[in-house]
Amino acid sequence: MLEEILKNIEVFSALDSASLSTVAARMKQIQLKAGDVICNEGEPGHSMFVLESGELSVQKRGKDKTLVEIARLRPGEVAGIMSLFGDESRSATLISTGEARLWEISNEDFQALVQSTPQIAHQLLKVLSRYLREETRIVAELRTRDVENRLKIAFFDSKPYTEEAFKDKNEDKYALQFFESRLSMETLVMAEGFKIVCAFVNDTLDAPVVKKLAAMGIEMIAMRCAGYNNVDLAACKEHGITVANVPAYSPHAVAEHAVALMLSLNRHITRAHSRVREGNFSLNGLVGFDMYGKTAGVIGAGKIGQCVISILAGFGCKVLVYDKFPREQTIPNVRNASLDEIFTQSDIITLHAPLIPETRHIISRESISKMKRGVMIINTSRGGLLDAHALVDGLVSGQVGSAGLDVYEEEKDYFFEDYSDMILKDDVLARLTTFHNVIVTGHMAFLTREALLNIADVTLNNVLEFENGLRMGSMKNGLA
Ligand code: NAI
Figure (cartoon, rainbow, N blue to C red):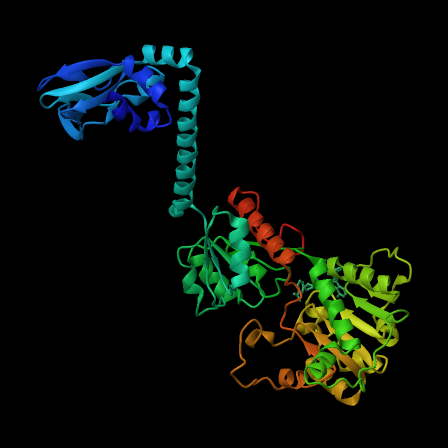
């Protein structure tokens, strides 16, 4: 009978029947009547009790020192379980409410049993380790539920792939809220109650928006991109908002996309694909050129530009490099050059400089007129580097042979959204999409798994540094 009761007590649940009998044999029976006190709150406890019949009142002293019943102990329930493992002080007073039968085992007897019967120790360990695992899980879960105390980050212009990567890297450390809307004067109210705003390339972070964000208590703008031409850094400084970006998440992703555009244009991959799908296997009009031996001009030789240079050098291209702050070029067939040399000598020109006032429309009507007839122009940097009207005219006249654009000056109105049910109102963009020798992708050069996870990792690390007081002000990386 006692063994049956013991078996249902969690701490003994892993004991086999022999061990249960050994424990039961060490227990002393106590017969109680109404009002008998079994133990008093606060006194040292040297034993555990198991109730076989009757009821015990579990009482604690209230503020005015009077005893208050907080629970009833019923048959099959235990009290003082922790006393088995040491002299724990009693957490409550136990008083019998009537006739009751109790079994008691002292910690001295229990510990002697454990020492003399290794299988009991072994079986107990199993339960205790299960307890430990469960408690650890509960603590971890409670921590993650402690939303109030976690730093809150509001994501704007969020997409499913953004959410996936950030959730993966966050591991519930910060409270993340993903909004699909872009950040603007109209939507900034969504950042109410947050300390950090995480924004992307097409969010508006001009002086009026920054001022309002500061008034709402935003302390940090964590850009999840490299470029930050949409952030008014002076306004952030004035209002004490820390700004961080992700200077490099995968230069390879962007460089490889630039080269993908080059190859697709040169070898007419999209046209060939649509033809074959229509059952048209004709090759007329699909003549490309060998990349080997051609001259490629790279404007902006930073992290992305350098990757492009080595890929093109690998193809056997002659690479001309223009950077405002030129570095020594050590790869064979790669040399620094002036902008004019690049314009006049290149078969392919690819842009990897940031958008700043002096690089705006670096590809202009004038520069296009200097280029080799039939030149290929690739822009994966920022739309503003290229005058799209001039490009359309160059394409119409044949001066420009082909163009691969991942960015567009007015992309903000369209990119990252589905407008397939609507009419494109931007005539230049609409015109660009009609040329068979132009490929437009919607600002996706960064979009690789590796880059997304790196973006999430670096952004959350920027937040961690801010949280730890290591990151204050704008752009620790020296970009601004
Ligand atoms: P980076 O800062 O490493 O390199 C930029 C280079 O441009 C530097 O070497 C700098 O000296 C040079 N530069 C500055 N002013 C110049 C000027 N007036 N003329 C010529 N060169 C100049 O930047 P990174 O990581 O290589 O990125 C380049 C650009 O790519 C970024 O500014 C960003 O706008 C764009 N980008 C586009 C992405 C996309 O998905 N399409 C993704 C990531 C970046």
